[in-house]
Image 1 (spheres, rainbow, N blue to C red):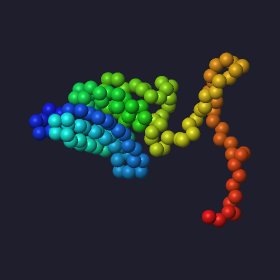
Image 2: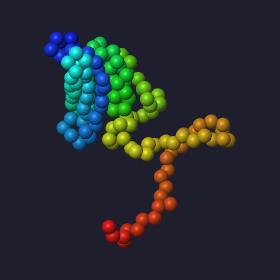
Image 3: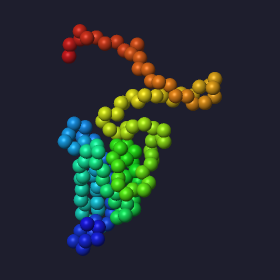
Length: 140
């Protein structure tokens, strides 16, 4: 599609990841291509499960490396033949994939600066509800 005379989709404008948690296929990778010669756009979608992977297109579009790394970092979707899959937007010690719908919203740890130790410390998150008052008898 990039070099064909009838299409010439020479620009990869975006790659996105989507998580369909309770679907037949868990993930979708969406490629948005642009043809400047014909002023057209096309969206190509690839559906896959947890254990499947997608072939990398870095040999076709060099700018896909960033988006493939981002999708791997956020969703855990593996791109075969991408030689640079490493964390890009999350911390290197980060565990899990934050854009998956089954990722906990609160996380497990919080960072605080401890003035006595003069460093940043990890603390387990405690979710207290002491300032919330619920009126269960109120009608809507």
